[in-house]
Amino acid sequence: MRKAIIAGNWKMNNTIAETKALVTELIPLVKDAQCDVVICTPYTDLATAVEMTRGTNIKVGAENVHWAEKGAFTGEISAKMLVELGVEYVIIGHSERRQYFAETDATVNARAKAALAAGLKPIVCVGETLEEREAGKVKEVLVRQTKGAFEGIDKEELDNIVIAYEPVWAIGTGKTATAEVANDTIAIIRNTMAELYCPKCAENRVRIQYGGSMNPKNVKELMAMPQIDGGLIGGASLKAVDFSQVVNY
Ligand code: 13P
Image (cartoon, rainbow, N blue to C red; front, side, top):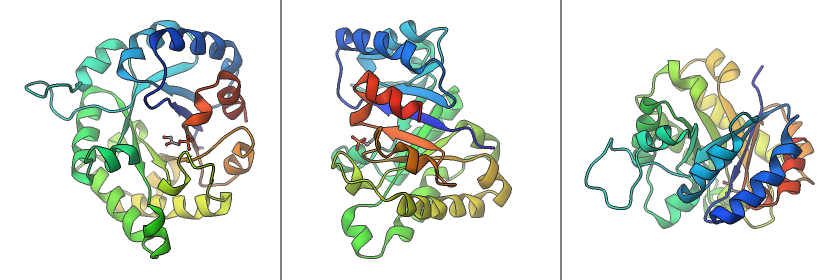
């Protein structure tokens, strides 16, 4: 019912030259994928990635976007600029941005609205830290982040948004949430979406990815879980063979 979507988050990796090499290798390896395939790249690689993937099954995403249409925001990039480049997706509220760049639920919401208004598809990230999990606050944190991110967003937009559940303690650490923990935690997010919108909407139209040390070895087990609709892949998206093995799970 919900089509799986697997996206690479390159983070601050790959020059244009490296992008050319990686995408060239990737295109034939993922051409028969059954899921939606997205690569989210640094701003400087977007034009190259869009150009190279035209006519393939790979879609391109950015890793952030500003909420204003334009103006005096030195160093920022607007949704319209991304759309004009041919970008289709944008990661919003990644935990690294929350941690290092003062991202809040309110700025996540503002960015998501601006992205949708311009026709981009946001991949909205939520997830608890290790301290929050150990303090028994997983539900409280995820409900707050989810409600915050979706404040004022219409039901009609649900087909255009993806949620990524990324437990902060599993990112880049080699520690994956067990498939059961990931599944149960994603259920909390889906229940929150059911409450915010409607149970059917949450069941049929909200795609929720898992992210955090997802790789060729654990992808099958994670993707077998009923709540998990895909993955947001960091480290393993930087090697064409590894990413293709995740995508072709
Ligand atoms: P890793 O796959 O490197 O753990 O990163 C996950 C992530 O942060 C994707 O957005």
